[in-house]
Amino acid sequence: MKRLALLVPLVLLAGCGGGGGPLRVDAASSLTDVFEQLDPDARFEFGGSDQLAFQLEQGAKADVYASASPKYTEKLYAEKLVEKPRVFATNSLVLIVPRGNPGHVTGLRSLMRPNVKLVLGAKGVPVGDYSRRLLAGFCGHAKRCPRARIVSEEQDVKGVVAKVALGEADAGIVYATDVQAAGGKVLAIANTGGLNSVEPTATYEIAVVRGAKHRSAAGKFVALVTSAAGRAALQKAGFALP
Image (cartoon, rainbow, N blue to C red; front, side, top):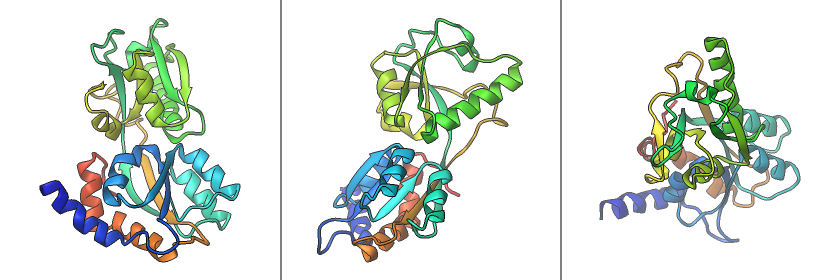
């Protein structure tokens, strides 16, 4: 009953839907659980922030765009495809392993072993770019670079989690919130190496798409995400707040 009591005011606040079909929100896949909780009636497309931005540039129709990197919202804003973006959450990176940790991974130093199989987000995908920045920072600190064998480069963070959960890799780098959402299918290695000074922070931005079919509902959804109720839901899901 408590969960239902929380969802009812959130849905009322969102005010999404109405005439002409449901609100459409294109959002980074790491936002799946929390956004679906905030508005169960909206139509969502989750994926890599880069791919969703590209689709908007190619004429895809959406009402709201939410990215795991300011790189893409700011680019769309410069192209006059979205209204002024707003930062609404941040996230941190963690190293994950399959249950049982068959590769005996204990931190970033373990990735120096050439037999360790690693899965990352693809280049251009925010989690992939953040991961490479983390590894580059570690290289500078350790005076040597990880030599892990990258066996797959995924198009979104959910793909990284799935590969590790299935045991197709010994380790992967994802957002902290994805470990919580995975429900025990993967294990997080506490602290990716004690290198907080070089660990990048993922910054999330949200914007109303220019020419949105559901302009009023889109504004209400953005207002919900940045409201006290939205911030509480994000924090409960493991996101940090700006």
